[in-house]
Structures are given as C-alpha cells and as structure tokens.
Length: 388
Image 1 (cartoon, rainbow, N blue to C red):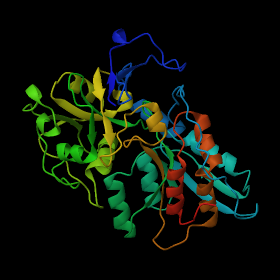
Image 2: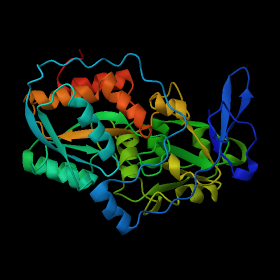
Image 3: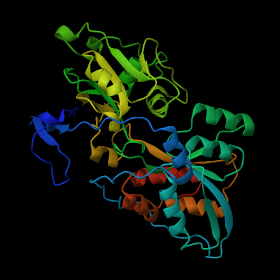
Image 4: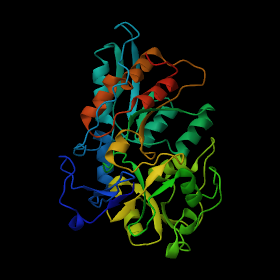
C-alpha cells in the first residue's frame, strides 16, 4: 500500500473523515482492497539556530500544534496499582531531551498522587546527549531521551561500567511532528512502480554487511521491476553518520542477530535529513530514508515489512498502532547493573509511566503516541517485574 506525497496544487478536494488534513484515498485494486493515500507534502524545515538550541536546553523545545488525529488508548494496557504504601520514599534526579520536559513533569505530578514522599527532580539542561552523559557519571538516576542512545554514549558507558545501559521504551514517537521524533519513511521517485519492500531487501540495498542474508541489490530489476526498469541502477540517498535518523535505520534495518550492520559504499550522503526528499524527487532511480515531517517533495512512500509477511504504509493509523515497522520510541535510560534489583520507588515510577494512567498522559499531550499494550508489556519485562 504505497503512499504518494503530491504537490498542494495537485491534491484532490476530497477530505477523508473530518480531520482537516487535505488527503484523499483512491482504490487501486478492489479485489486486493488496497488503498493509495494522497497527502500534502510537509513544509520545508530548516535546522534550529544556536539560539534556539540554547533556549531549548534551558526551557525545553516549544511544543508544536498537537496532531488533529488521535489514537484511542489500548484497552489492554494495565491499570497502575501501587505495590507499596503511600509512605514509600525515594529521592531521584532525572534528565530529559528538550522535547520531553513537559511530558516528564506531567508524569511526575500524576505519580505524586500515589507516592507523595518520592521526590523526583527534573531540571535543565534539557538535551539528550547531555542527559545520557549525566546518567553515565551518576549525576542523574534516569535520562529520558527521544531517540536511541548514540554509539558514543553506549561506548563511554560500557568503558566506565563494564555493562550496557538499560534503555526502556516509555512511549511512542510522533507521526510526522517536526523535531519530535517523527516516524521514518523509505521513499522512491514518484514514477517508480515499486510499492513495497521488506527489511531483508532494504538491508541488501543499504548495507555491505547483509546480516539478514543475501547479496547486494544494486539494480531495480533485482527487486522485480521489469522492462526499462530492470537494468536501471539504484541510487541510494542517505544521511552521514552520526545522526539520529541514520542510527535508527542502522539499528532497526541493518542490525540483526545482535550484530551492528554497516552501510555500503557509494551512497549519496547528506549531512542532515533536510534535503533527502528533494534529492529523491529529482532522481528517477533514487531511494532514500527520511523522517515523515521532512517529506517536502512529491515522492512515493513505500509500504514496509520487517519479516516479509505483512506490509504497512506509514499512515497515521499504522504508526499509532505500532504496526508500521519504522515507528519510533522514547526511552528512559538507566544505570542498572545486571542482576541487581531496581530501587522500589524508581521501579514504581516507571511502572506508572507504562500503565494505562501514564499512557493517558501521553495521549492528552497530543504530541507523542501512547504505547500499545504489547509494547508496554515488553517494557515491563525489561523492568524485571511481571505486569500486575
């Protein structure tokens, strides 16, 4: 189920539902029940200025307008039931990325109704890498980070502690909110007939390690395209390491079997994510990956499958339901030695975040997406405590 992003002038006037988003659906094949979604390109964005970066470290990044669409909370999320009396005590200092202080403060405020004597302090600077480093050196108990830890973060932690940090997903990312952990899409030129790819195919296109099996894919014919497309070369547009989008795709697609994948040579690498969609739109043989909020040119977004079975396009519904395999996550990163039990007060705070009440707070903010029950269960398991 490919997704096309068309120029605003070419959009159909039809609105799907009453969400206020200029979008349309066209049935491609009634027997296959496939639908092609037409959405307006996102506005072109520019990097934050140094002044905006510094302001964000002090106060947090200004929140965007909430998504008009909102998912329903998963009814199978567990209800938070305190496991200790209200006199439970603890004293913790927390850190957060500049996109997260409002959400983390809301969690802290709500948690205090259950445990008024647990002191949770969150203050500036708000920045993911800074928070990870402060967690590494013991200045904070947990760092809430709106991306995966960088390889440098992990290497420094392991060099100091001789074990890996514990990263627990605490909520979903966003759909296509600029600067707030938008989902990642794989894009091709809009004239390209291909509609979907699985992760093994993507790994063979993007990497030299091919940890998912197979050999390099360098032509469109190797992906099943025929006629004039069969011999045409694949031009890959990617982001120069290190970058949050690049690291996410490397971990999610190139990595496998506990091993870290490596990019192939000959990529068209940009320093940032900003130009990728425009470059692919200008190259009939192009393919690339980009955040959904950076799709500011008329390209086709592909449906993806992690395992070669069910394919999902990056629609709002598929991202909100965590079906789309390049949906993203927000993490709480902690220093917890293997085999050591977590402090009861901190464990209760994280259990609260992962509960129905904690994810309701995510939903009410309207920026990030609440976890689905299966994701929350997996995070509960990481805490070492079975769900209540």
